[in-house]
Amino acid sequence: MKKIATVFGAAFLLFASSVFAQIGALPRPSEMVRAGAMQASGQHHPLNAIQAMHKGNFFGFTGGVTSFGPGSHFSKSWLQRDGLHTQLNAQFISVQDENPYTGNSLYGPNSSYTGNVMLLPIFFGVRRDLAYEQFKEAALPYLEAGVGPVLGFNFPYGRGFFGQFSHATTALTAGAFIGTGMDYSMGPKTVGTLNVRYNFIRFPGELAGRNDYSNLSISFGVFRALGR
Image (cartoon, rainbow, N blue to C red; front, side, top):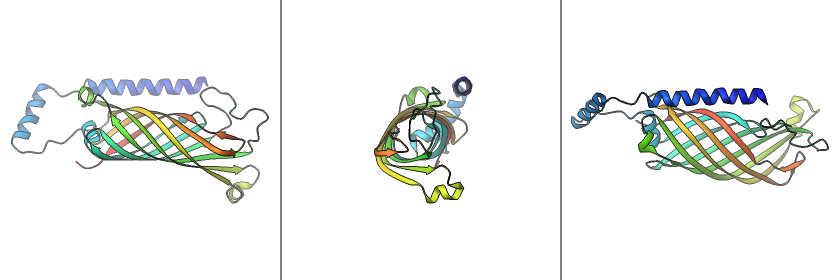
């Protein structure tokens, strides 16, 4: 637990220092005058990464830790209007028998946890950017939410590598998530992101000894703006 806290503390400090470094790199007045002159003369003035994210489509990948174990997700977003996107999120969650945040057993000493569990949520959602005018050169906070199907797999122990796939059991349910995050500029079209979300996942029957797999997710990743 202490090691995990140390890792996340270091990652947070790195994230914070990157944001403040970007805020300190805001364009000087002379650069703004030059950009205005380019626009007046009809020359194209490229967007920076934060502006491109706010005003266009983008995709990206994050990896991190959920309250069940390692997790990651791929995201593709489509602009509806400035600062409002619809998005597709494909997540992968590898379930462990210990909460990585607390160190407590997730199933208890008398559980029927007898295999490896993987969760594959496919969420369709919306993302809303916040405080764009205040941070548009350096950072971009946002809120997001989504719903969709969740497929769960239970791969039994003692079957060998290939045998566990042929003897796997599956379960399907509907799920949802709410989240927040912060993007920070890393280049002309690339941003780093810190994402925190809560996934609501409950199966109608038991999967490896439990049915409630709702979890907290903290992840870091990279997004790439498409278009200009």
